[in-house]
Image (cartoon, rainbow, N blue to C red; front, side, top):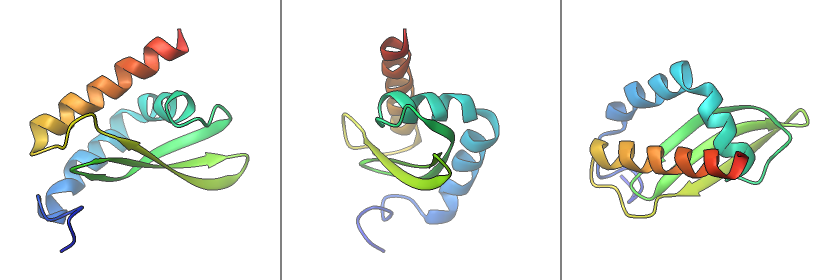
Length: 97
């Protein structure tokens, strides 16, 4: 396994990624539009989470785009992922206000 996924077994990320995509699509889109510099994005999904950040898959003007947003601190587990996702979302909300 490479460094991006060795801290958790890949299967362990399926549930959190599924939850984010099923329940937080609007939040993902806001983060992609504001923090990811893609204000014309029509949709966004979480593609990957790792110890250093999150990759969103977005549709911008009908084309797929990958947006990487880094964590402020390297994640060591799920609690860190939650903290960093909340931080990014709050930052996106402030930028959108």
